[in-house]
Amino acid sequence: MNNNDIVLRVEDVHKSFGDNEVLRGVSFDVRRGETKVFIGPSGTGKSTLLRCINQLTPPDRGRVWLDGEEVTNSGARINYFRQKIGMVFQNFFLFDHLTALKNVELALLRVRGMGRAEAHEKALTELRQVGIEDWADHYPAELSGGQAQRVSIARALAMDPDVILFDEPTSALDPELTREVLEVMKRLAQQGMTMLVVTHEMGFACSVANEILFMEHGLVAEQGSPDLLLHDPRFTRMKDFIGRIDSRMED
Amino acid sequence: MDVLLILIDWFPYLLSGVAATLGLVLSGLVLGLLLGLPMALGQVYGSRPVRWVVGVYVWFFRGLPILVLLFLFWFGIFPGLGLGNLSAFVVGAVVLGLRGAAYQSQIFRGAIQSVGEGQMIAARSLGMSRLTAIRSVILPQAMRIALPGWSNEYPNILTDSAVCYAIGVVELLTITSRIVTQTHITMPIYFAAAGIFIILNYGGLKVLHRLEKRIAIPGFGTGAM
Image (cartoon, rainbow over all chains, first blue to last red; front, top):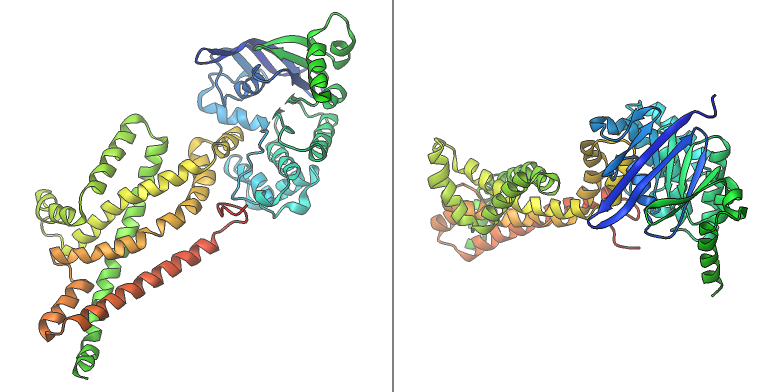
């Protein structure tokens, strides 16, 4: 496999909500198997950026390409691209009326048109992958936040996506549950899944990210390897931001 | 005990009205469901004109007394449409259904809107079309949320069905008054009819309640957290 193969290209994405310009021209390339982590203060457009990629929030300007095909302005084909771009949400958004297993099965049956037996097998495999097959027959309300988030990761994985977008996947979880979800994500990264992760978990960012994009005011302010952004004296803004978080936590 | 003997004598005839009453109720409920659900979807997901049409429909059918609606359709609208030879039963069932649809649409609209927006977002993010998401994710949840409120429609339409007496549908109340005329016994006969209405009401609600339990999902829509 060619490791420099660019799977996702984001080109000059702009998005405003009314007078509020949330994204002011964001561009980057994602190589296959890469993990990019987006860090930055709240309200700087990180989550909006992820939603612009799979067109849940269509950007006002700019383009998104997946594997050389344009995702923006793709009309009804967007449903095809969304299969290939998985998404994991802060609040899980599991289907509340379905068991963990059926949550993973549903899109296999209804979108990919798999047969029942095959979908069942595949869903079980994905649940096993995130270590939650014992809870397959439980409903979302019966799962802890960490378990629910792992099911939602399995649900995204089941579509065999080219890339998965994680929108603050652990922000609704306590530290213990956060750890179990980050473990799963770390393992995915090691297995070569391409991931874009919006998070405030600096430990995860530094140990897993190939590249950190520090965002401020709708723009990528600093971009580079964790080592570079943390230790190179030319980069100051992310360090300032981390310093502000740390001092707030010490208060 | 003359009265009791007379009552026993006439009771089978009284029961024959039950079939027509239940026929009115069931066809009214089903027609209301078949029209009300798409109307609710139109009101939530439809374009402006669609929402407007549904809005006007609901405003019209909820705004008029049931008796006025029955007379309008029986004497005016159906004959005007060249459907003057429809039986009173059919007209009664259709009016109950059209009116029920207005109420049911608002029950379903509320239920659909109370499904968290994250459910649609998650479904779309997996590549489901809007239609598939509505069918596979939104409606299964909305229907469960709607059922307790929807169950109200049964006693509503059951009691409303008696008004079809006014256009000559031979249902429970019509038969009751015929027996009263024949026997000159009033209150015991009406009590017997009232008893039958109460029993029908109880039985139907029992079935709906059982359905509610049967489709319940742990931790979903119970309000018990």
